[in-house]
Image 1 (tube, rainbow, N blue to C red):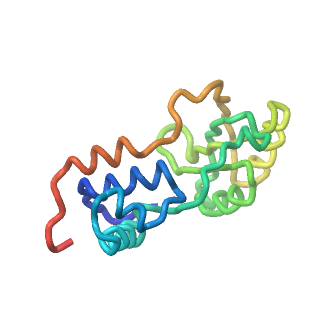
Image 2 (cartoon, one colour; image 1 turned 90 degrees about the vertical axis):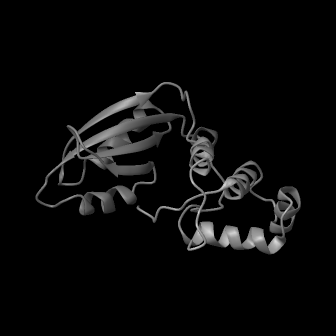
Length: 168
C-alpha cells in the first residue's frame, strides 16, 4: 500500500507518540497534555488518518498469547503466468498468514506466518502451497524477536525534517 508523502512536524510526532503509548486516550486529554486546543488535535488527527499516516486504532495482539507461539517467514516462488494477485487472495484466506509482500530477489512473495507448533507450521505451509501457482516455498523459523515491529523512531526521524508549508 502506498500513500502520499506527509511531512510531519513536532506536534504530529508528539500526538502519534501519545496515541501509541495510550491508545484509549481521548482527544480532549491529548489536547491537555500537548497544550494545544482540542480542535487542533482533532484537525491533526483527522489529517493524519485521511493521508494514511495513521492506519488504525485497534488493539495490538500478541499471537503467542492466543496460542500461536511459532513465527516463521515463508518465501514463495510463484508461477509468473497467473501473477501475484491470485496467490495474494489465496493467502488472505489463511488466518495464520499475518502479512505478505511482493519482493525482489530469489522469491516472489514473502509472508510472515504464525502457528501453534512446528507440526502446526507444516499444516500452515501445506495450506499455503496448495495454490496451483505456488511453485516452491522456503521457510525460516524465528527463534526470538530481537526488535518488535516499531514505527515511533521513524516518526521522530521524519518530524526532524523540514516543516510543512502553508500549502499543506
